[in-house]
Length: 375
Ligand SMILES: [Cu+2]
Image (tube, rainbow, N blue to C red; front, side):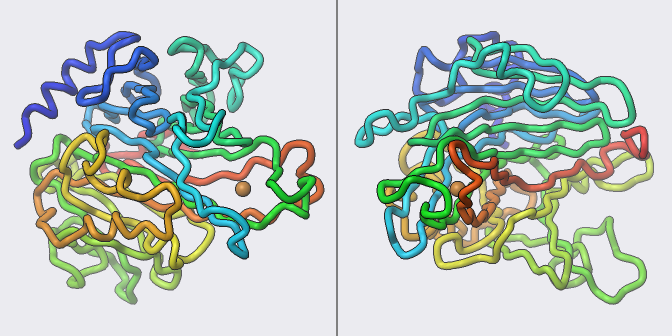
């Protein structure tokens, strides 16, 4: 077991604003802090040197540790007809070649926060908005930051609900314009590909397995066994792999710890569903990858998002990383690609309609009954 990882995590739980994430390049702009609300406890980290947007780390639900950290290492944008790019866009990391690009997280005002709920508070030198709704049938919190990416603004957000739903989202907005048009429907059609990196440590990582669900004709699914694929609807993928969503088979995935069970004896897991808008293509070649943890993912050559070039042709470096190492009972990192097609309209002037991306993630069997209050 990589105990140094958890020593760092323990230190971070004690962290206050201004301390940098472990392993990161020290930078004065890094801020962090921690919250506990609606059964979730978690910390945020905003560090422009890491370029992962707003990261959450040490995320637990009802006392069960789930995410070591989660962030958005990069996105890609591809214009139809090869009009420009394709580009690799990083949330909050300044570019050495494009002036004004990626200026870092935007300083928010009280008029910006709240955005999603009725009330919010600014943290992290006014670059993080935290919003709470603690009453009613669907208690939840939002935490988010805003980033400049060329002409556009991206919001990196997380919605955490008391029923165990965890929704990472990137919202894209701003002024729609390209080098060749006045905006609106004369702007180039394009695709956004947003990538999340999730270092999931279900009740800490030893015993963790990565499983895939495939709908079959069986009446009752076998939900609680560790069987190698394709033995049962839920089955274990024991080596590094990339996977594609199958609409006909309702494909979904989970990281599960068979050594950590709830009072019904069922293994605790976190379930990941794709909400991507398009199929895999030559640029974004798969939907989900499960690979073995190598490092915090903060330096060149460390894991794979950083090896995707500035003008990428595809996400091939991620595929190259998924080279068949064992992930059976190992420290697993899950990557998720979300594909969005943007068809610009005249109505999107002067500012475009927000387009959204993000997986649907749900805590599964951490509690023995529904942790939410129902509909
Ligand atoms: Cu767009």
